[in-house]
Length: 325
Image: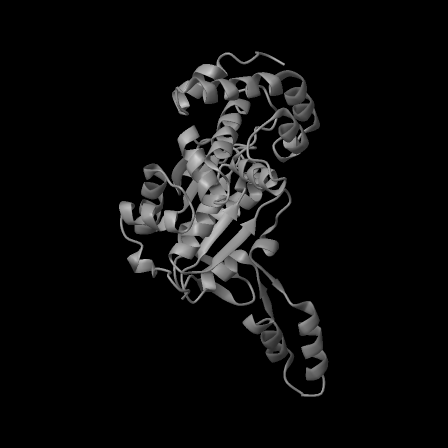
């Protein structure tokens, strides 16, 4: 167990979870802590949905650190099959053993039983989670990218936390893992999967929360630049973009500006680093041509007015930005 880590039984209630997540560098709202608490207490998977880059995957990572256990990650993608997610046979090792067994005179059935046993198995994420010596955090990331057939198989695993392997038999979980599923909503998940999970929606953060995240993750940044970055992100998310930047882009941008020794936002600084925010060529062109000037003007207006930096003030300025594309 790592230094300063808490054992699972000490994860505690909602206030303790919020404190633990903050200790791990995650700025959490009460609804996040409540969802984690219920997921752990009820041994139910937690399905987290939201736009890309809002911190869904990070919840599983900090949960694993907080309860001092392993994080086992299954990254989903189109075409993911059962064997890639569950197990494969180590064919090279099996062939080597077959060669060694050629002169032993053992019955064929005994040889088959030997090479199709657990030592010759390559455990993939789902089987690793089920057979772990301590309950791990199982992260099933971007489950919406997997095919519906794989989702149906996943239902069986999450229902009983056991799998059947023809050559070996049924393997039951030694310890029920903490399960987190994430989805970017690229397709609708089945009602059956949703019924087996608790649900959490994570939206883009408020200005105040984003500012706290910037200071926590990029501690070297000065408060003026952090507020300007937070305000810029709040405003740019309100314009028409195909790929809206998330928290990950906020932190990348903050680090980039620090690397360039910038202490405030100006047109040149933003122009040079806009690729940290816009990951689509059309978005990049649109922001440069239509929105960059108006957003920086409104950020300057906040700084000069003395009205203070807050979500309400930023929302008022966002309403004044150009409409359409």
